[in-house]
Length: 143
Image 1 (cartoon, rainbow, N blue to C red):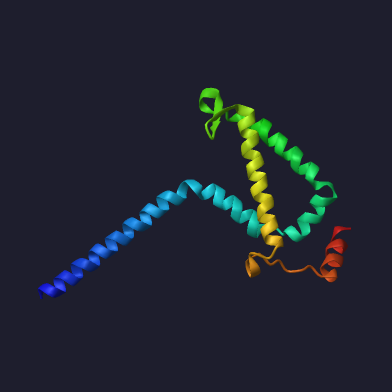
Image 2 (cartoon, rainbow, N blue to C red):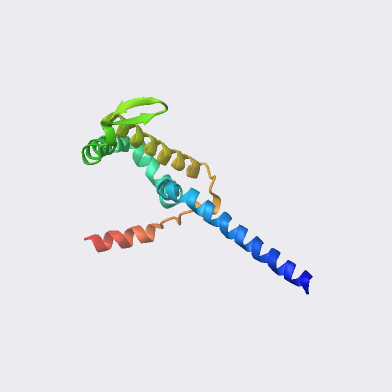
């Protein structure tokens, strides 16, 4: 009977340790969820095979303008405490820090597109091709 109690007690301790491990992992991941969502969206939610030709034909100018507007609005709406950001031991002003953040987020998005176009995601980032019939059907309803 005592052996059965020891097994049960060991099982309870194991489940408690697993629960503590899961809680610790969740607490580590929660602050990174916005960045993980950003990476997930740009990796799996955007059809880069359609977006890249648009970017190549001049859409990069739109991206750069959106970046600059984002820096200006974000810098005006949410200045950091103390008035400056700290990067790798350097102190940078509000707008410079926001520019660094926006540039990093844009680079991450473009790297996600590069990974998708290389086929790294396999079937997880496959988008169905639109047929010519669907294009004609859509244009018929547009008139």
